[in-house]
Image (tube, rainbow, N blue to C red; front, side, top):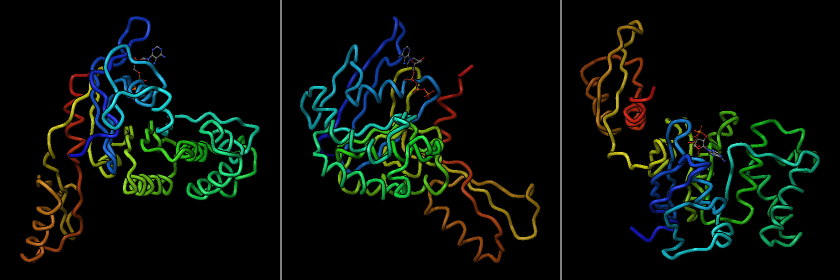
Length: 282
Ligand SMILES: Nc1ncnc2c1ncn2[C@@H]1O[C@H](COP(=O)(O)OP(=O)(O)OP(=O)(O)O)[C@@H](O)[C@H]1O
């Protein structure tokens, strides 16, 4: 594989003598979406803040394009979307984005153009010039996403971006992240919604008690099968290694004359890995 755009090794960070992150290793590649998952308090936000150049690590190194990097340069190349985006309520979404554009040294004209383009992309055009205080939580999240994209970042870090978003916005977020990755952005996204993360990520990083780990390759996945006329409690569950095996299994059932009413993926590999990770929690 190519040199990671962003590589963190052995990162650690404490607050008041208590370690939030003890040993974090992450490699983000251009064109790939990496999912970050772990229990509450595992250290995900702390890790993301260090990767964004917004929090100084106590230990460890971060390289950008294979070389050591200063915080200012890292911040310039990074888009950061926090889990809740506090807006300046009296400003409009356009004014907020233009103000952030200024921080990235965009001229007022370029900032305005970029702001309008992004507000259209996150479907907030109708709110362009209305006070941000009128935005719903999900709409504020979408504004936060637009803000993170103002500087056309090569690295995009998102902390639970979908929280508060309605189903359509979630689907659009997933598609937007894929489009950005296809255009060469390296994306790291944290989420507690495993099915969503499983669908949108090329790579997964697990985090527990301040340390990262890479999960083992794809686990077996369960499928729930019910024949026409059978009650729900008569459905059977089978384990199959992947989608291709599931399609083959379904074809065999149909060829054997079974009328299938339901054929559903019930457990993703990520869910199984996560439950294993979480097994010893109190
Ligand atoms: N600024 C801070 N000051 C003191 N403690 C902090 C600070 N930030 C984080 N912590 C502590 O560090 C630990 C990790 O927090 P962090 O927010 O990074 O976890 P997380 O994995 O993002 O959690 P969640 O899934 O609940 O968002 C927690 O015990 C938290 O209380």
